[in-house]
Amino acid sequence: MTAAHPRIVALVAGLIVVALAAAVFVGVSLARSTPTAPIAATPPSSASASTPPRTPTPLVTPMPTPTGFPADATAYDLAGLPRVDVFAVVPALPVDVDPTGAFTGELVRAAADLVPIFADPTALPVAALPRDDLYDGTTLPVVEKQEHWVRVLLAGRSAVPSQGNPAQLSGWLRTADVESTTTTQTIEVDIAARTLDIVDAGGARERVAADFAWGTDATPTPRGRTFVMLVRAEPSFGYTRGHPLVYLGVQSPTLDGFGGASVAVTAFHYHDQHSGAISNGCIRLDAAAIDRLAQLPTGTPVVIR
Image (tube, rainbow, N blue to C red; front, side, top):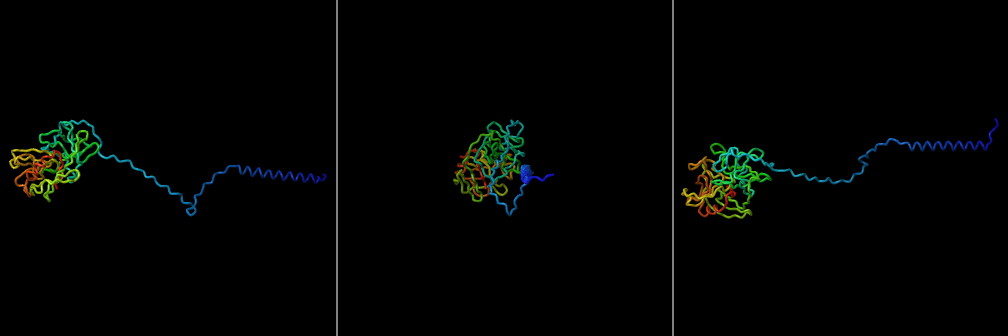
């Protein structure tokens, strides 16, 4: 074999180097173009992490919670229910649960001849309220008002004293069953101070009496809130000297009846003796005081302390 020419050898060697370099370049390019699995990011340590800006938490205004009892549009048969009047004794109806509470300033009266009275607005009615009655007691003060219901004070009793609690009667009426008016005056009696005032909605006081008579320990005057049930003169009651009596919705806490009647209604009335703890529960007044109270409409709120 003859020896290769030096220039040829050099050329071949150069071609080999170029080929190797090209192979290496292609390999690197393929390696770079081949996709690799992503590497999960490692959260920075607390020492090196930057504190993100604080974003204010938005205040969410809660939806108002519906209050009050749901509406009841049922047409009830009232024929078998007891009528609430001064003579009624209805154990199913409650006494006033908050005798020192406030009045709403609203009066209501039945919009029909007879409307249902409820002890519980989620249950069936237990009594009926007439629009008119011989002894009134049909214009009633509201002590709690809801969208569909009003709680009112009532004439009558839940029980006579010898058998239960004879305190001021109360019940619920549907707002759809009543006509509503407002009242701006309240009669306030303070037995300890011996004062009787008419107080208007703005708090102004008219002093009606600076002395009067009230019940004995055995026949006390009932305390708490009540209302004017009836205003009427009764000529047969000679002690009134012809002045009207202002009967209240509340009755005696100790007497089942009085004067041969089955009721023992508390009243404001005239009496010659009108000072001190001497009555059977009524508030005895002078002529000017009883005549002033007789000018107030039925339903007028009364508070006796």
